[in-house]
Length: 409
Ligand SMILES: Cc1cc2nc3c(=O)[nH]c(=O)nc-3n(C[C@H](O)[C@H](O)[C@H](O)COP(=O)(O)OP(=O)(O)OC[C@H]3O[C@@H](n4cnc5c(N)ncnc54)[C@H](O)[C@@H]3O)c2cc1C
Picture 1 (spheres, rainbow, N blue to C red):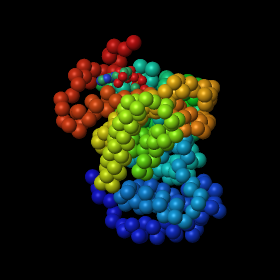
Picture 2: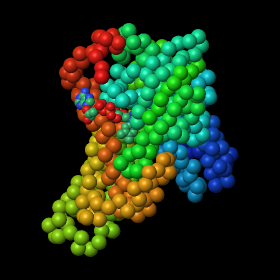
Picture 3: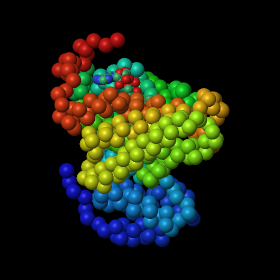
């Protein structure tokens, strides 16, 4: 893997001040400010020059943020709905996209103008995503897509989707896939919301009825979609993997500590208090360990895409978060059983859960998804066992069999 270019921290700060002289967040709207940040190479500094970066270590992304915060009371941060585009869309386009796609798509991902979604999972292909059935058939300069995806986060507000589809059913499953960037406004794309336990509909079912995609929107080569998908998945685990807000006692653990401090006096017996203190302290230690591990891994990251090690923080983050909010509910005692913040069906809007307790109840419900989304905890353990620790692989009976001959329900 290539090394990053060397640059001093002071030089990064100087370049950030030059950006602020040209466009200041207090006087500029978010989109034009972020487009200028992209042009200055200060969007994602570890990307190459010309694509929003400077080709330097990703640890300097924090330096850019810090320097902006020093000089501005207004911060134009990432679009909250833009996580998939920024965390996964951008690196996959950078690694596998044509020059045209890079120039067209990358600035708008960073500016927050375009929201992206990831269309991998299907009703019968989640953990075994390489077994998927959505078909894309070549027709001249276009591909025609038919099939169905499911659990597609933010598809209802997306401009672009990363689509993995089967282009050759006659070869083993991993060899017959191709990867497309799909304009979600294309005719024949039908997005239908799915409601979650929290009352939100952050994800959807997506149906494709003779959807046409230009051949130029293929990422990588025909039949090499699995390789491209791996780039997405490795980045996904890092993007959604734990580490909290990056600040000491920030993020979820900060909220849990607030809940602990605000609990009513004598809510628990002395014995329960001691037990609760023990659980909260243990979670604080584990959150801090995770935060520092993630920070160290990012600091040491070489140029290019992350490797299977990203599964460490994905697995640990999911499991800590679930225990964190179980503790939150236990801290509230019987009050934790009501969801007074309102269990109404929503799509897209924020949780609107102002109080510490409301946030904790929402987080308890939402955290159940952490060990499923982006690959389940069992799958993370398989990856770590096989790809990091070098343990023997699981038996894979369909590996050499043409996809069309694999029995499926
Ligand atoms: C909130 C949320 C958002 C999501 N967003 C997206 C999205 O934007 N795009 C997208 O494409 N997908 C998305 N997903 C789907 C997600 O990636 C899948 O749900 C996940 O990969 C699991 O697949 P599955 O649901 O089909 O479960 P299955 O694969 O059917 O798994 C069922 C159970 O079997 C276990 N299991 C399966 N195989 C093995 C094995 N080999 N070894 C051990 N245990 C195994 C699993 O761990 C799980 O416990 C989202 C899911 C959630 C919950």
